[in-house]
Length: 175
Image 1 (cartoon, rainbow, N blue to C red):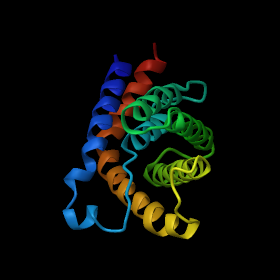
Image 2 (cartoon, rainbow, N blue to C red; image 1 turned 45 degrees about the vertical axis):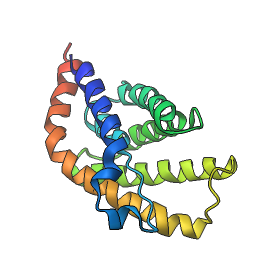
Image 3 (tube, rainbow, N blue to C red; image 1 turned 90 degrees about the horizontal axis):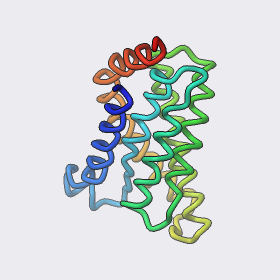
């Protein structure tokens, strides 16, 4: 049953991240700063840290499916988010084995995950010539604001879902 709740929450975050920019003040939206909400990624990183065990990869499969949905709905290049989210969640799942699952470790993994995902997306979009930003422009005008916005979302989401996600993970492992 928890897998259905996770999928429904991911679907909710998919819809909400599409509307996220319209919820911000106009002077922030129309500034030079570019922020990309990676809310599904943040939620799936929490799933990878607290729900998945060493031998389960549910978050990776959700990343594959919802990355494809993001590609279909929001981007013009099919597979970019799907591959990026899948690789980043898999990497964080592996790094999680070295860290104790707490707020600080989860925060560190969220920062690393969002930074790697956004940088990987920038590199792919630069390679296929969809973006023409220089590395300096990208890091100052997109990467830092994206990290800040997504960490605010992480700080809000973490206390709301951490205990429930952990309980779901224990419930599934006891079956």
